[in-house]
Length: 414
Image (cartoon, rainbow, N blue to C red; front, side):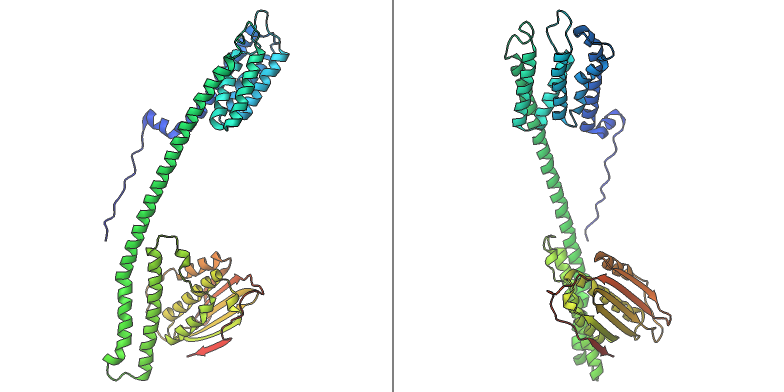
């Protein structure tokens, strides 16, 4: 057995540095964006009267259009740029400058446009970034008079081009870091997956050593008992054969489970699972094991989908096992109707004598979970005569294109 390694969680950082880490870079970037917008607005409102002839009542609104579109940088940079550029053009046309002022835009508005162009370049495609760069250069260059900053026709395109180039470099670095983080995460997941597979392989080895070994001994002892023990009657010989057959069936199922545990998790769905067509073999195997079983089947079992059939098989198997364990020697009756839906009832009478059983397991919960997984429901309760009844109802899709093979309609074995 491998030793268990206890991994202690990393100590939580405290103080200012711990707070910075918990907020994260995205949180700090959002906070910085809000703070920048507030600062720009606080500057735009009082300085508006220094450059434009605007009524005091309209100053807060015009200042808001100049500064607050920056708030959209993290949410929708393209929309923020469109609002800022449109309002800049509208303000330049509708709001007159004070005498001596040659620039139709506030400096705060130009700064906000630069911020938004940078944000668009870091998030949008190259084609869209080129359109935003060209439109902003045309807006700023055409709005300046010859005496203003528009004297050099290449000043705005070059300065905005440098800003876009820096933004593209930042975007490339961020994407490279994101790809590196993604590859690191995939490596961690692969490492965790490999650890799980190693643990599954260890469990499979332990199961093989503990369970499969002893089951093999049971098979060998049951098969050789008639030859090792003198005076074995025909009924005892048949009982030994039944024990050997049941043990072999259990051993085969254990080997299937071991195969799933030892696999890499990609072929588990290909492991053969019992279906409704295997119920006849289950009934006959129970009678060979000495269960006083009668059964009746109505409908076409082969028409049941494999997923539903597997759940039905396991429910019947668990019900018969519980009846044999808790009421050995009692009569067991199985009725199964596969009409519009599957109606199953497994009823056993009281045990003829005292029964010594260990503590209960999770069989009923497991049966209920299987029924619910395929859209059905299951109930399990004692009967008035001291027996036990398991009833399940599972929806059945049905259809004319299903197979027509059916089990024998009735069967009896004592």
